[in-house]
Length: 92
Image (tube, rainbow, N blue to C red; front, side):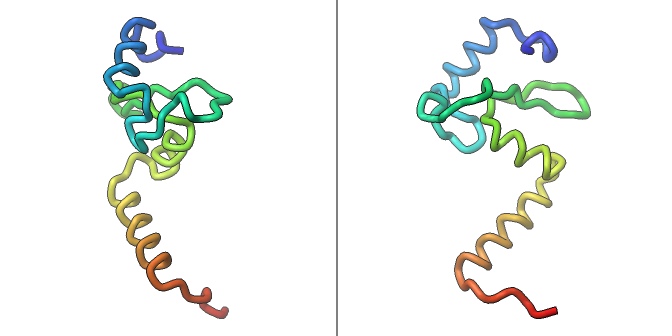
């Protein structure tokens, strides 16, 4: 798997250590996660450039947001609005 991104096992392990063995995105410890999958190599889909190592959930989050910061900011604002003052959904 790491070969796909041009990483050796030594480089992968060094990245994990540099991240304190935690997801670079959410900062949750990999040791405390119930991992069914190995942590993912986060990479730019256009350039292939490796960013860091992230958990499965953060990998899905970034992938579903299409690595678009504005999409992620909009989602964050939505959560802030709805968590601060929950209201019923609009009637259709």
